[in-house]
Image (tube, rainbow, N blue to C red; front, side):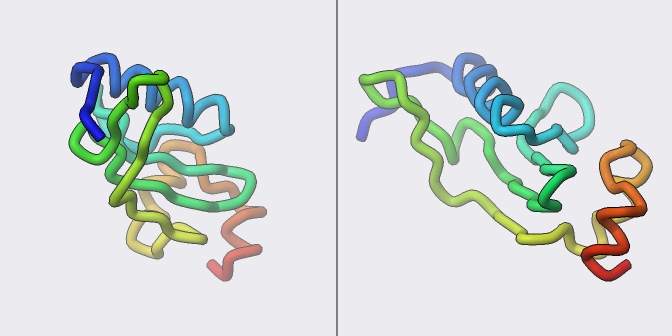
Length: 95
């Protein structure tokens, strides 16, 4: 499969796609490669332009993401600081 979109277009498409799915960005600054779903607790990381392409039909093709069913404990302080890890979710996943 040959990528048919540039880096900025890919990143914008990933942001729109993940937000539409209810995910919140956890990456600092302009890079929106890491995402968190505050309802399910799922973490998806590494969605940068080398791991996501657009095909000729305009669909995103995502490969090599890092997916955690619950946030790793090492991320809890950052998620809490960003207001994304609530006490309810933390208690449910075993804080």
